[in-house]
Amino acid sequence: MENSQRVPKKVVDFVLAAYLISSVDEYTTPIWKYAFNDHPYSSLARIAAEDLRGVVSAATIPFQLEQDAVHQDRFRRFLTSERILALEKKPSSPEEEAISEVRCRERAQARMAEYIASTEGHEDIIDSIILGLRRHLDSSEILFAAEEILFQAQVAGWSAFESFSREFIIEWLNRNPSQAIDLIGDPSVQKLIGSKALSISDLSDFGFDLTRSMGNIVFSKAKFDSFHPMKKVFKILFDNPKLQLAFGPQLYELNQNRHLIVHRRGIVDTEYLKNTGKELEPGKRLYLTGKDTAKCLFAVQKAIIAILEASTNAASE
Image: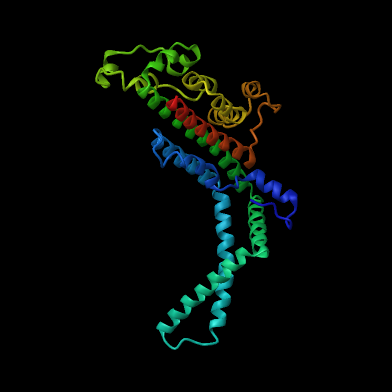
């Protein structure tokens, strides 16, 4: 959202800290381009885009509702004035009254569109949304709910990435089974897949054919909640510098935030401080802002794109 010149900066900063204010398209559009072409993993790209869409849509609910309320309020003002002006010529029948209402709405819609396109209207709507969101935060219940929404966005954001990564790795190994040898031999990867031996029953489930089921056999029960082993898997599969950079600080922070929220309801402990290097007080609830959440969700987007691009480059070699 643009920074309003008529609302004090401290109010804007407070609102941006409390809420995620973003457009879903910012996060999903770059992924969609892999979903509607002949990319071999287009189906996984579609699912990833929809998952991220769900995360952002849910996290931006307060912003969306306030934005809609402001737009509806402005439209009702125009419609009311048009209805009043229409009273000058009172309809003589129900049919004329219905036609008059349609024309009132059409004129109100035209005035609304002109208003939104104007500088004054544009700024007024932005200011009103900011002030409305700020007013809601005067309620302790809404303030707590806003914090919880950001918490859950972190959890859901990592879940979306974890789900995509799991399905991608399984599908990649199903198509490239020989790479399973390199993965299984790595100690950090073994933490993901465990040490359970392959049974006859397991082989039977896949028709005793490992050539197209290696990914399912090795990773179907793997836990993808650990950042470093997951990063190592992708390094072994692709050894792509851009992909390794995508597994950067923001994605790692998201993983650690998710772990703290899921297992300790966001209460900071020494393990979190050790892993993140943050200087926070143990025992206090983790404080996240809308901007923090946006950075983490963009990290998910970039990592997903980097994985898809790495697979494209590997296939062309």
